[in-house]
Image (cartoon, rainbow, N blue to C red; front, side):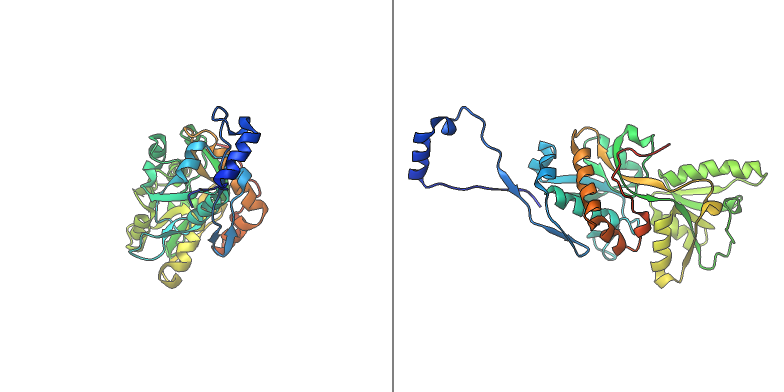
Length: 318
């Protein structure tokens, strides 16, 4: 919600008396006192979030004046970001709800706009957006473009057809097979690394088909063009549970299936050109962690295990 000033108005006679008694206080030569600002509480997944004046005061002045943080996201990528219903432009999801909660704590709105994933960071660097919230893995390479405020940990997984007819249990089981992945993601880079495992065992290379959206990668799996879709394990589990009532897909996860990789931090990518914004977001997110609001939002999406205790900045190890 935009911030609105609250003022106490004195009758003209009283104001004149005050000025007569304290001329220096009414002089136009000194700086005007900062206005007191208020913002309405916001309810996110049944959790009421109120603004914290101290945290709101840490926002850059440009953001406070605008009353919003401009956020780029790639949608759909459930359960992180998705539309409320087919044909709707109203967003929901883990990222969207956490964004609304962080914004409410800071007394501003997190205004989400859909963009293609591989164009998210360039759009922030170009000044079109202040931040990215799109299940984006915090990577050292990406830290050159934005600073990350990390908010969950999650690892990769496979989405496969119901019953796992290709019997994918180990990462080398996809050697010589076609698999889909969303372009520009960390998962695409991991698949490139997995090619070495195929070579080491004298197996054919993985045929990687990259798509602009993960929904397109899922469609390739559904239609039989690929044997599996490589994506975030949280998204894989959500899609397997919800697509056609759980009748279409299964998931395969764990180190044996995805290769030697641990859960990685996912973060809010914050523009380096807006000094102070990442610190304000980090403070607001940490306050939501400390009061339990953050955990309740994750629980609403049935993913409490991806929670972290501290909102770290640029926590990637590689």
